[in-house]
Image 1 (spheres, each protein chain N blue to C red):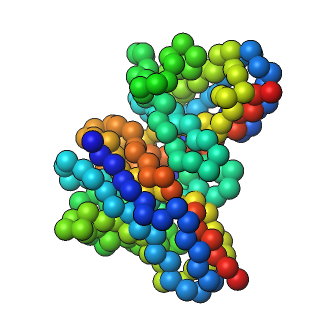
Image 2 (cartoon, rainbow over the protein chains, first blue to last red):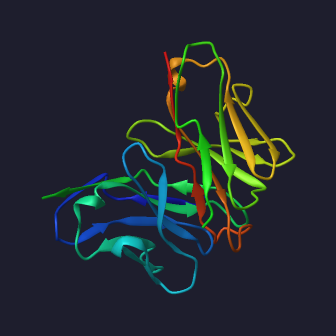
Image 3 (tube, rainbow over the protein chains, first blue to last red):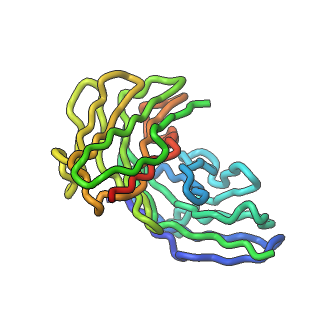
Length: 114
Length: 120
């Protein structure tokens, strides 16, 4: 079964410093992977997606992620954190081929300190 | 871009009553929608897959008689929480795929803004 593991439940960084949110995946086929962000009491917003094209994926708000098959990783990075980046981040994999639901990681809460 | 609208955004109901949550795809047709539940400080858990014109597919452990799903049109799916109990209090989120390659796993899901249900 497809799954993702987010290695950190909480990450805290200072404003202006780099962000690294780690995610490892498990999949029996070539996966589609996504990162979503959820601000408090809000819905989910897609940051970026990997669908077997370029391994380095650029998303919105300066975020990017690199798909590394050898490491089964899809870590999310940003060069410089803003206060507005404070939120919950979910690494997500599709459960199977076709129009199937997403399987969510447990989430990583990002705190940004002024 | 594709938008999914969810209504209401929050609802408070008394124990034993039923609550209906609507999920609409605003600018695309969605033959399949997904319903998730999120407890405080936890991740999203899939409850069921809603299929237009047919019965929903429920995840293991989700009571189909308690969480009634109706997907009567290509743009609307509803989730009804019947005989609600305080333990049903949660954040319910619907989603659907839209845009190019909507029928494939490569297209991302678009999410509604969620419904916060509080059962007193």
